[in-house]
Image 1 (tube, rainbow, N blue to C red):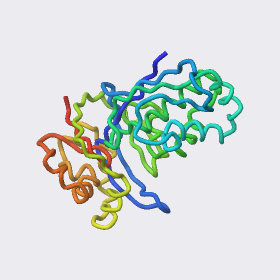
Image 2 (cartoon, one colour; image 1 turned 180 degrees about the horizontal axis):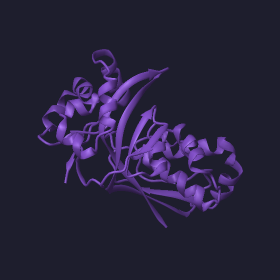
Image 3 (cartoon, helix red, strand yellow; image 1 turned 30 degrees about the vertical axis):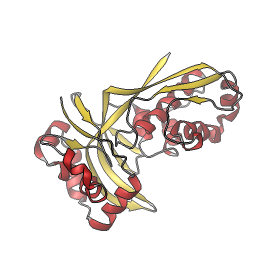
Image 4 (cartoon, one colour; image 1 turned 90 degrees about the vertical axis):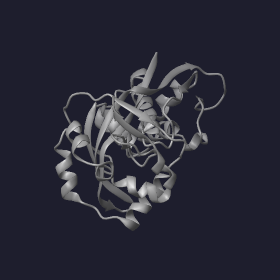
Length: 253
């Protein structure tokens, strides 16, 4: 059975504070159902403890799926996972661009957690699964809950469903790998937070947001990204908006 790991876009993304080394945010995440990676368990071909097959731009231990595997082991399920993967490998067909603000790695990790929970009969509840996922990355809990639209806050651990009509979006991803850490550093050094505006945006529908605010007002990280990657400017177009820390832009379809 093949599982789909969907992309996401940020309709708005506001930085609202700091917690230790992390930035706290308030953001509207929306699933993109027409762009997804494909994950499937197959027969194992190697003697590796965890066999992951796919085209990734990183070492195995840096991969979000492997981190999700390790996090689940640490949560008390190591025996079950090692038994399960004695004869199985995970194959991933990557369709979501990496370093693009679309949450591909986080979605892969969340989808893997759902897969292993079901196929290995771990019976982990959503709350615990989201907690395991948060160790992997801030965006993972959103994908664990699977809401079509949600307001995400804190460092990603607070996910509240926002009920609205589904959006259909078109995505454009320039060949620019945006470093999230560098973009957040740029914001921290050059821009101020606006908590009141963030709270106001959280109450509005995504359609209202996209028709009421500019691209820079909606996403605090756009101007910060342009400082670090000025070449992004040539991809800005009317009615297109910036997702996450980049480099993808999206528009309503």
